Image (cartoon, rainbow, N blue to C red; front, side, top):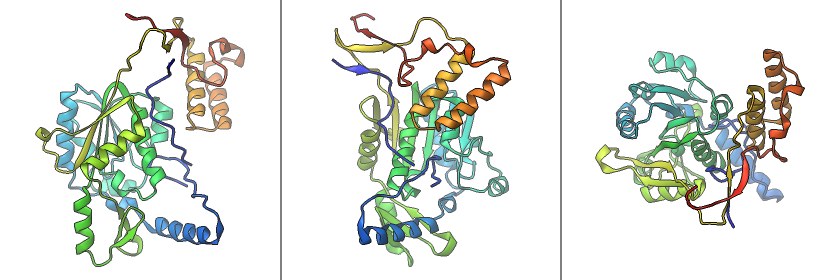
Length: 329
């Protein structure tokens, strides 16, 4: 018997400020050597500035990605890590949102880019919800993230944002490209699975991905309910890149599935159910969730008694009713 809950990527625990908005936790390996290593790694990461990798020459890639979105009839797109905001402006005839945690607003304005709508991916999920975007674009972001947990969390959140009929696009710099840059550089330092370039406050991290490595990396994180494929050559994107779509699951007679409840919820109950799902997913803390609910109740002139808790499943898994699957359903 299989239990299908939802096409969400596998859970990856994150916890300092990160590209996607989570709190990062140090590795717990113990001992004096581990403490020395952790201190060295922490100092190196602290000095790396991902915002310094934002460049104005990626608009060509964005135009090509816009073509991919057009071919998939995408009308709502989120730019996940929008940098200077110049690429976001290349999405034509679409409702565009974006977030950028590192590049200063003043620099974006000076570059005449689109100002980000959100600071972090957590903000997007909290405000707009899971599966809220037909298109999600992540252009050369994974390769500038030095922390492996944070990097994986970006992929996970892309999977959370894309709709069931949507498409996500991830591009990175290539492995050979980064290796060649390191060979020519006078100050490249090997670090983690990549290199640190530059000095002082201008240090940046780069980790190149081969095409096959990127495909496997993204697939392993998102799991079997996502299809990860190489971007077709016809789009002319010269770097490593993948297209991601959700896979419609198949079932046999007797499998257990979960279907949405037939009766609609009142607005405040639906709101609370969404907040509960964010708590369960680790996006927000319970205390903050309670504050949000109290604020919503006050805005609508409601009380706790107006929340229909009979619609909730114990443990916060508010996703519907378990029923046996029958062919043709």
